[in-house]
Image 1 (cartoon, rainbow, N blue to C red):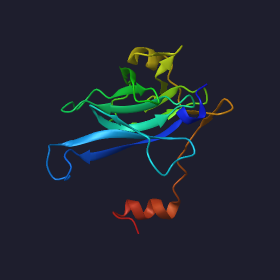
Image 2 (image 1 turned 180 degrees about the horizontal axis):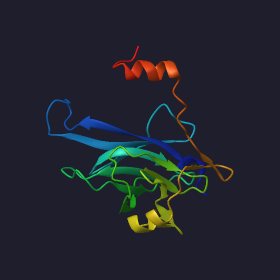
Image 3 (image 1 turned 90 degrees about the vertical axis):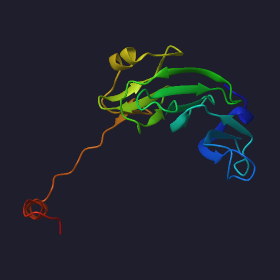
Image 4 (image 1 turned 45 degrees about the horizontal axis):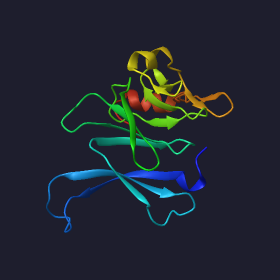
Length: 170
C-alpha cells in the first residue's frame, strides 16, 4: 500500500510550448498529479508523448492514461505510470473506439470499454494483450460487491413513436 502522500489525483491538460504561450509548436499534453489532501496545487507533471483520451487512478496510486501516438488514427493504447511519473508499461487496448472509457474495477484493475463490454487490461499484475482482454471481457461495468452496472433503454411511448414516424420530433 502506498504512503498517503503518494496517492494522487490526476487529470490531463494541454498547454502550449514556450513561455508566452503563443509559439513553440504544437500542444504538449501532460498529466498533472497532486498529493492527497492538497488539491489546490499540483505537485507533479507527467509529460506525455501521445494524445491522451482518458485517465483513471487506481487505489495504489498507479495512473492509467489511454491514448494514441501523434499521427496514428488507430491503435489506442493504455499507459501505466507510477505516482512519481515513471512509465511502467503500455499495451494495446482491445477497443477500436477512440473515445473509449478507462475505469478502475473493484479489484484495482483497469478496464476499458469496448463494443463487447468491459475488458480488463491487467491480469496477474501484468498487462494483457488484446486477445487476452477479449477472452476476459464482461458484458457490464464491474462495480464493488461483485455487482455490475447495467444500463438499459426505456420503452418509447406511443405518442413519441407516432411523432417520430410522421417525420419529426415534437
